[in-house]
Structure formats: C-alpha cells, structure tokens
Image 1: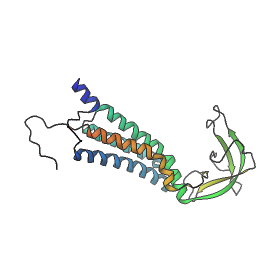
Image 2: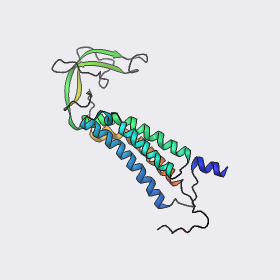
Image 3: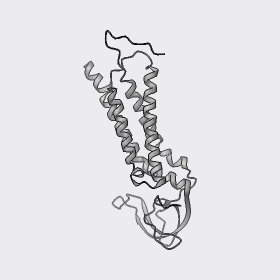
Length: 219
C-alpha cells in the first residue's frame, strides 16, 4: 500500500516544510510553462501566425511540462492533473489573446445590424443572440457578433464593433472599459491552478537518499 500510494500521489519523503530547493524547482517549472503558453498564443495573434494563435504552441508547452514531473517520478495522479490544467490553459488562451490584441490596437466602429439569430438553447451559439453586422463601408463583417447583441436588438440598429487595425484578429462587439490586462484576467484562475498543481507534484516527488549514499545538506 505504501508503494502504491507513492506511485499514485508521490512519496513526499520529508518531515515538516518541503525542501526549499524542490519547491523552487516546482515554481520555476509552472511559471515557465504558463508564461510560454500565454506569450506564444499572444504572439501568434499579434503577428498573424495561425497555428500559434489557435493554441498549438500552448499545447506543445503542455506536453513539455508533463515531461518534467514524469522525469522526477511524481505521483501519477498529480502528473495527470498538471497535464489537464496545462491543456485547459492552452485551449482558453486563444480567446484571451484575441481580446488582448483588440484592446491594444483595435479600432472602435459603428456597424448596422442586418439580422439577429439565437436566443434559444437549440440555436447555434446556445442562448446567446448573434447579430450579422455590416461595417461603415456597407461590407458585411465576416463573423457574427454576440457582445452587444441582445433580445431587444433589431435589424437596422447600430452596434459598436472593435476591428483589428491590421485585420489579423476577427472583430467582436465592444465592451466598455476593456483593457489589455482585463483581456487576460480570465486566464488567472487556470494559471494559478496550474502553478499550484505543478508545485505540489514536484514537491511530493521528493525522495530520501538510498541507504549507503552520502547526501550534502541543503542550504
């Protein structure tokens, strides 16, 4: 049972607070992974790299992150938790990255609603209302807008839309007071969870030296 518990949750062979050296390693691994995931996705959206903007770079970072706790023989369950949280962060990052780009270089324009759809669970988009919008030049925007599209919205109404100045990010409905930092705040929960899980996995992988070996005291 002890061996099984060690394989599943990690041996955690220490008494009292976890060793500082191992804790720092866990923090560095988690911070490096979440920073690389978010930065690569934002860079892809900013420069128009479709694969990075879609989160493929973040998924690669998630795969690399899982390798580290496996190498230190962390508990299987904790390795799985780290992997799931890393993938979830990578999948959530593209929307936040698009919001970051629009907040930084987006241009607020007024469009005209041409059609309204949605409003029921059976409709595309769930219970959201989706508005088809034409820009000031009369050209239809390629995506339907849900921010600012409400039950009372009718064709012919004006709606505020944010367009990317370089056209690399799809437009979306304007949100009052949205900043670049606010666009990324939705990733805070996933980032904190990933960092915590990574630290716990690495810390619980701590093992005592084998009998007969000489270990140097940690400072």
